[in-house]
Image 1: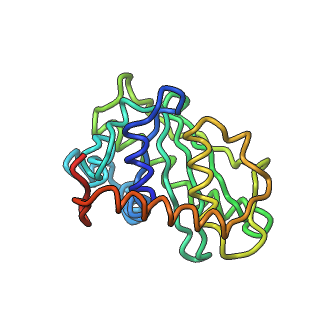
Image 2: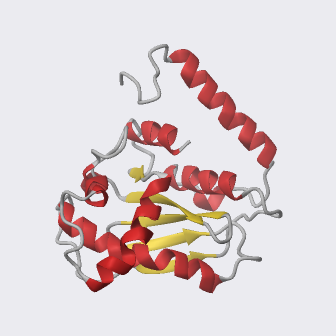
Length: 210
């Protein structure tokens, strides 16, 4: 679904937030290198896969992070089997974290999941040299968003992550309904994807002709 969102964001309207997303593997790669990088800052260089994400060349419909304001990062908390969303506001050097199950999953657990991003994102941005300003040599600040719609069961985290990103991208996060029909939201997404596939006869597993 984030692939489809990247395509929409690539050809966004002037009223939309200039945004980009990573894939679900990005955070996994961050966590896998975190311990090594804290011991040796040279553990990765500009040719490492992580340093390619900000250039926009790593993903289909990718955008250079120097040309967007926000980067959406889906994070899978494997020990909790739970998805959360980190919204990286580049100009503010800040992460807003959206956890749809905050009444059950404690803040300290979420912060521990986000901590590697706060330290490694600045490093890979300096390696990639895509920003129009000098990347600060300090970790990102972080805030856990509380006054947000949240799930009432343990199986809806994925749809909430997608909807959070959609509303932020449309600059309407404060207008997101406190309650919505998750089953209908899933159905609508399936219809969107099916309609896109029908309208793109040259669609392949790797991308489209656009």
